Image 1 (cartoon, rainbow, N blue to C red):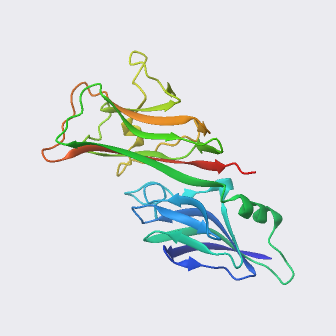
Image 2: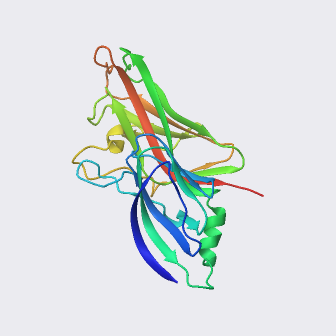
Image 3: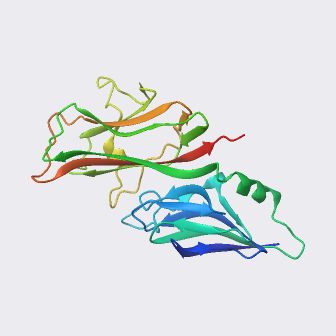
Length: 263
């Protein structure tokens, strides 16, 4: 058995199939697609990516790295199909294993292949628009994202969280982002203790700023029959008014580990 590093740029919408004596191990992913790209291995869904959370490159204008799958890497055994359903280019970083005659796929990789359609890294997104020429009143709260799982599911949000805004502004002190688990706040909601929630500035991907927000140290575990809500509150002290003919909008992206329990 021999292992070779790979860094491939594949075309979304095209089906790829390793040879019978090969095993593909995908460890990191990126894309230039601005819309969702779904991952299918052996025609089974194994998560989704988008350039907002998994860019094709890390550079001076986009500091986000490739999406690291960690222990939830993806495995494509020989003669099994790999397809990225969507548009654009997908970057695949990992390993290509070649098996010698008589060798079989290692047991740990086979086990991961068997579970990966029920346990994988993916992203969630939600957005809100206030409508053309609608001002955002001081102290007003709007919901950006809401998710309630089925009993057989679990989501651990422990990766990147980013917020994109239009016609709000990028200065700190404008908007607080608030996380609620079953309507209970996860972060500060008392303005006399300190700023409410987490300032939206922390979630923005700004050109030239070498940091981004992650829940790696504060994972949010969403279990079946429970609800996660993300809200935004205008804390600027006054109304936020969009330019004439435009609308205020917010979009949030969250990366996490999804599990579907079977059997």
